Length: 264
Image 1 (cartoon, rainbow, N blue to C red):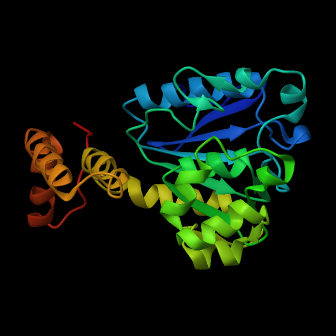
Image 2: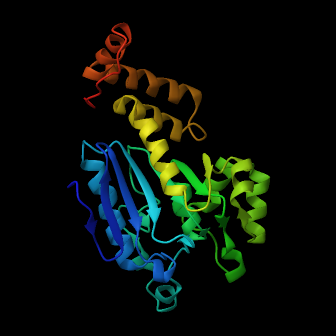
């Protein structure tokens, strides 16, 4: 990945600082809705950041401040092209089922509805402006939240409240979402991206391999047994022991200096 912005028809990909990538949904005129082009390009952006050893954290933002993502482009759905909004490796939007070993932070300004909320739920962390709103209104259109909302939302907030959102189709505002634990940080209007970048920088101050090993286990905390997770933890520890960063951390502490992480 180059240091300069790469403008694609539906996705912008850029580097901010040494180890943070920013991927921007770039269909503001269409509510950043998922089109076939956006799905294909977001799929490629995931693969690009995943394969770049210099990218440690990625922020997923959106053009404009009114809508983070309105979900599927209903014009494409009405035309019978719903399957084109998915990719083989990433599922819906080329993202919700993508294999990612590095943290992704959603930066949400405006509305995150239907598939837009599902994209945010597929991220590991979420930062939103106080003006943002969240909802899964699919049942109001005779549909269901098929891109992960039905199972990811109940894992993040209280299941009874998740059910209310899914069955009523009603939205909640950002302060309520933060209160329920859906959001990691709440910012002033227009400040979601800056807040997400600040959180990304905090994560990048830590050893990237340790972050990834921790993330991999934590993602399965609600679906795997304690025995399985403990076994995986031991294996992760053994992998980390063989890394240069494993030695650098204690050495930097003893020498009272900031560690120089290499990601290897």
